[in-house]
Image (cartoon, rainbow, N blue to C red):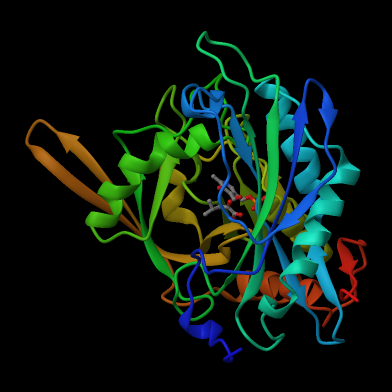
Length: 347
Ligand code: PLP
Ligand code: COI
């Protein structure tokens, strides 16, 4: 196979060898199947086509400097998928099945694990969705669980840690106050697509959502969590309608390790002007610095844009956090927390 240049890849679907899937029918899970057939055959009345009983996960496998392959905190993804499925009142794979299928998927796509010194990773996308035919509004009794993979480059397709701009979402919400924002449901992303398209058309890389009740405080980006650095503090929103990011959770630990104070609290929009470093964080984006956030406020006299400006490069503290997380993921730094799960090369 021709060598892949991961520096030219972005966060997209790139073909791989195989996917792994299992079904749960009437409460009984099938054995996982590894297949090179990427097409599912589904009943056209399957719940997923109507009422969106669908949740998913995202995690990465890395080839380490020691040649060993690591999955980063897959147990956390398994737990979050279980909580998403519970919210949808549908069956979820057990921790054991989830981990087993992630490992099988990496092994089946071993040749697509990017080299350690590249900016790439093998991104796994576990999906869980309702498949039994239905017409009335019910949760799904039967589900399909599949783990797919793509050998990805950086999220933006740019070099690592290249800052991008964001705009506050003043006219569209991602999640309702008592809604599903804290779960990784496909429906949450459907909710943000139109607003995202508008932001992209205006040239912004990211869209930053506010709380839906008051539009006064920061929630998260459409693709990732928000964190900022100020006076030696790592500050990130605390809200039930924000997705509990595994990257953010890990960064909070690392921040404490570096002697930063960690604050999870309400962040009012006005506080944006006081931050020294602002970033998005998540599995796909890792840490992506934000160089400017625009707030387009509509007044009777027209729209004015308030600009919050940050560094044009990654800030020094964010860089340290990035290096530690990537260091753990690629085996360059000691995994003091036991976050990585090793995957053996297939025989
Ligand atoms: N918030 C949203 C809306 C996301 O899509 C993601 C990505 O998964 C995150 C936050 C970050 O979560 P994690 O770090 O678990 O990938
Ligand atoms: C991830 O970071 O794994 C995600 O799922 C976010 C993606 C939808 C951009």
